[in-house]
Image 1 (cartoon, rainbow, N blue to C red):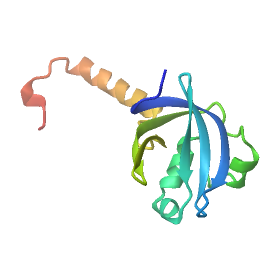
Image 2 (cartoon, rainbow, N blue to C red):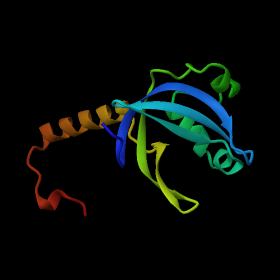
Image 3 (cartoon, rainbow, N blue to C red):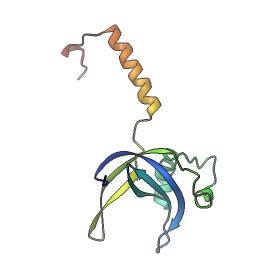
Image 4 (cartoon, helix red, strand yellow):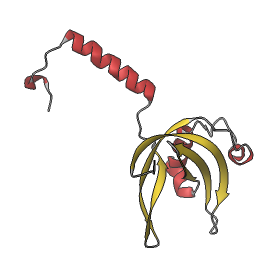
Length: 138
């Protein structure tokens, strides 16, 4: 399988911390998607930190900055190994070149939430199995 644009469930293989040549820090999350391996970067820039994006992405990976030390991501490369994470593969243009980029999908529905909503829907359908156009509120 070659990774293409889309939504996937990936499994974390390894984690680390890195810094770009211009000084931007990131958490590198190595992911397996099917037979392919790709890297997702969680940018630890001021903008990503203050917007809450970095914290939400790391939380999806099983890392809670409120409870854990950021340095552990660099010192314990298997800290997050085995955790399944929803990701998006999408095109990214940088310096005139387009590549595919892996992003942790913070908006993906939580499986427990999906199960809860499914149960509610099934219960509602048992009470009102016939729905007409008049029942739809829009």
